Length: 625
Ligand code: GLC
Ligand code: GLC
Image (tube, rainbow, N blue to C red; front, side, top):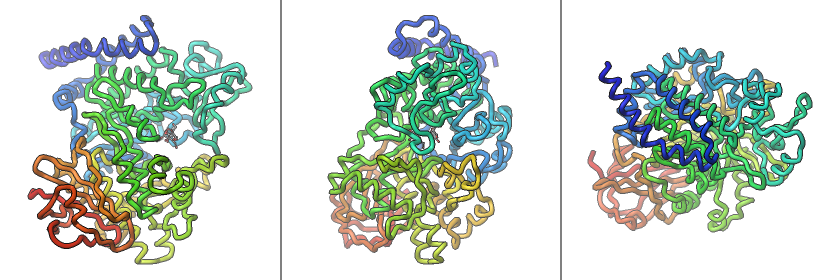
């Protein structure tokens, strides 16, 4: 044991020496030569290492040998609210086999930390970073769950809401009570002069629910920066003391056994007058300071950044072992999937993929169709124009289509954050309802039910063919429908995201083996995709799918080569029978015999044409595995 301890100790000291200069450079670039706060930061880091338990130090050593553990084709993630899924942490521990059965080995727990009473933005108004939400259980129970997951080879990801705290957080309360030290942790102003300057260039995140970016409090005579809701006070990272406190709490949480930290709303953490306060370069420097600190204490723990914006900004957040994020949400893929489904035209997807810069080595995308938030259609205006559409009207079409208003739409969703002035909106709704199942069931149309299931299966098949970690939004795997009951709850009624934040229906899940039900048809299909994906190393991260022209605008085609094995994805985004000339596939350099690894059907690329059924997809491989 003593020997082991020495090994850990030596590894820590080596890392510490290696990272020290990197940390200090990042720190100085942001704060100048602030020795006192920097030394405090070092103390926090050393203290956190001391507190880290041996079991975790042991897995750190393993992870250091295998830095790219998360790039494996075997990683499959699910994202869930503990209470909606299994009431509480203890319940979740019991239900974990359900996720394992699907093939999931990575769970992103939506906020589990203590939040304010009443409205809490779905857990994103944190009142203590070191306590678990008592409704879910205790920190000891959570730690126990993470231990169990580690034993079973599962990975745990936890949200870290660092842009703001609830106004009920102790720091905010002390600021409210007039303690200058704590007021300096937030953006607080006596008059509206500075806020007015900020507002000139700031957009609104929640234009309908929480207009403006500042809130005024009569009681204390102060304006406070509140990008999101009034009760979420933005933290001021211009003050190094804020960063130090955040590092301390972050390391405390990681020391419970967390493998992946989701940095929430990361593009908002640095503010400058005259800018839109989004994705400023300092955001990344802050992330890099956090990452270097994490590398010192617990190498192998990675960050996923949430920046729902144009991919060219998203790319900038990617880093290395010591900097930036190792995973980012693939907003372009998500948008492209929904765009292709509504337009029955996959050209945007191909164009967008072609124009997305390659991501650095050693990091990956987090691919998703849905998550707990609304869907923002983040289209690239230039690419939309190239296809002959007007970007504004095209976005209006998508919004109207997925809300279900556009004539002929199969979808049923709701507006989110509708902006009266710009007419912009995002969309809420479950995968199944947005894909047409709700409407089809309502109309009792067997044919439409079938089509909606095919749409869901198609989206999953395309997403899982891409490199990056696929993320499944809990409930979507059993084709859960929108739940309108939030409208009767005054704490939720004005936030349509609750439409798809539904209580997990375990009765529905009972049907997961019954292929004649939508839940069974979706679950079994997804399970199969996951299972097949795990068997082929060409699905690992870093091996990108390249689009090719299938000649049919309905059909997306992509391919990749991995040594001797090759993979081709063909996906028909329309409800029509489509025929494509196999020459289009041969143009990529492939020929001869291929096999659909999902159905085992053989296909000879040299003869004939390819006939695709409505929403049919193929995962073609030349490998004999
Ligand atoms: C992130 C979360 C979202 C929340 C917001 C404010 O975007 O995903 O649910 O509303 O941050 O914390
Ligand atoms: C904005 C935020 C993003 C969040 C979303 C909440 O897009 O930038 O962080 O997910 O609002 O709906």
